[in-house]
Amino acid sequence: MKNLILKYSISLIITLNTLSCIAQGIYFDSLYYTAPNEPISAAAQIFATDSGYLVIALHGSILNSHIEKIQLSNSGEVLSVNSWTWPDSASMIYWYGKAFLPTSDGGFLWSDIFSGQSSSLIKFDSNFDTLFTKTFSLNGDQSKHIHYFYETLDEYIGACVIATNSDTEYFGDFELIRLSHEGEILSQDTVEIFNQEYQLSISGIHPLESGGFLVSGSRLYNWDPFIAKFNNEFELVDTFVWGTEYDDWLPWLVPFGSDQFMITYSQVEYPLGTHSVNRPFLMKFDAIDMDSLWSSPGDDSMYIYLNQAAIQTTDHGIVTCGYHTNGTQLAHLQKWNEDGEPEWSRSYRHIPSLGDTINDNQVFWDIATTPDSGLILCGYYFNNSNSRAWVLKLDNCGDPVYDSCVVVIDNIGDIADGLAAKPEIFVWPNPFQSQLNIQLPEHVARIEVLDIMGRSVFARKSYQLVNTLDLSSLPQGAYFVRVVLQSGPVLSRKVIKAER
Image (cartoon, rainbow, N blue to C red):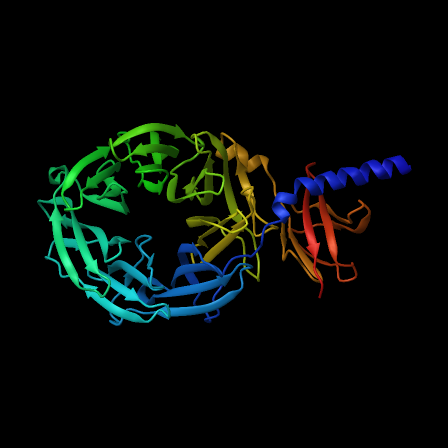
């Protein structure tokens, strides 16, 4: 009997050791703002700072929206919230892209689309007060999209698309702009590329060590990804276009060596009825020769996959984030090593917390690395009536810390089979103090709580999907929730009882 107990204890210790890369991360759950009946509807950008993280979010409905700058501590505590509303109450903010640029003076430069399809630039100081605003006039059949900028010692260099859409014309050109740090427009020029055959969409502007810069984006109608190279005189030097005959998706560039970049994008491999079967791709690109060095496909189980951002990790790998959909949307991450070999691909689902309910749609919108070599992501999850911002901390293995979400697809080849083959239990809050909530995938199950030695400290039969367990009598520490479903599968989850 002693040998059996010892063997079981060793097994639990091994299990805990395999979870160590998860437990060492810092956990915080979805981000909520305190304004009544007005949740943050989308978190679009996230930055790591010396004191924690900075989240830029759109707050409220599109008809009454404003921008939130939210400073988080390393543990996820909200340290400060600053708001900004467009002065014209009749205007609407169309959240279009990731164009918040933290500047060297501690402020921010931002551009977006407002009502009337006009593009405006706003410079904020560190307190989120407006230093200057620039609004650009347009012709009747034109719309000017978001500006993307990078900063030099003396100025900001930016690019945007001027789209022309009339009964006879449907194309776009670049507008390139030089802006002083004080807001003076030093130059503003339109550059024609691709012989005006396409309407364009851009995803960023990227300085080159050798001088000049790249503009990345896609061109309609088949959304071919492209890279356009300009010299210091704002002259077009060369272009590089790739993709398939179907709708590919915007490229995101990550500097990776002297004038070399890792480029992540979504490539459609073939259409399937009304859906496209596409997957993440990684390309290593040389900006001197304007050519691809290699490309590497990722997970091929995606339907309508859209990547939204990419980051270089501390181990020199590349992670791209976004979402895919096959009826509902799932947030998704894809990891490659520096040689382009896929390491893992995972889809995530938010779970209930703070009285919230499970929603069927989740999106990752931006990603950053953390001081403990983990990842932090922002985005939103939503149903037909509500949308909430989502800020998620992952550990250095790319796994959720505790139970802010679960991995529902993990390196498998078929979405439908994968979802059906992975029943999950959802537990919240975690850590807990007295009561623990559990949502089951079936109505009939046996729920048991085990201590670290594998001894049962709580057990009951369940005939409902959502259960609340009163565990106030248990001492603080680590426990395992073990659920035996009537259909046969045995599911488990580690939970932490915190000090009250």
